[in-house]
Length: 287
Image (cartoon, one colour):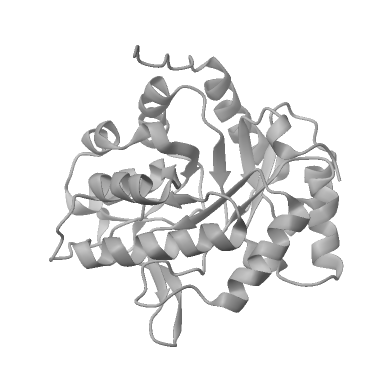
């Protein structure tokens, strides 16, 4: 295993895909790191885990979970948490993250990150689930802001305030997905710039960027978080607004479908790398 990831300066990373394994293993781009969904590697051995360990031997790796279902009305599955903790000990990820959403509810699993009313009860439930997860992993995790496709009634909290309160109660970090912000603002007719300006940026440990497309039926009135295209210019512009305030933050390019050649992905990643390295560190306020 290579140096512990926290000793390496990371800038911009990519989602690790089997199609690009050899390129990923041997790429020497400065500041490069790789992110995976841990659910694909919760095994005691085998070729998939050996592949991940080989990548980890050359590059920092981040675990981005999709199945803890932190917003459900139940605690995270203890067996799943134990497997996730074992993988984290084995890989020593530079970051671990999950979604502010639910995917399991009283048994059935739904392969999506689903929304919920941001009530006081939901805040308590999710904070407890984050705390249980962090206790099991013996590390802090980062929580990702969701993508929204329709209005939901019954909120007691604005989303940015809800996330800030989760940070205050649990000590967790945040993962700011800028593409999610842009899509949600478009779909709900709100202001993306106002959202990022209100976001608790001091707690952001990671940023995600991705492509999207317009719904075939509704067009640009409904944008889909598809991760199947290049990052839109408007999302790049929103990202630059964010890092002007945060300074350099590790940034991941997500691409999960319609995969281009490795060099095309690396070119997009290199653009993010240049923006991260050019961002000026934010000065701490005077006490």
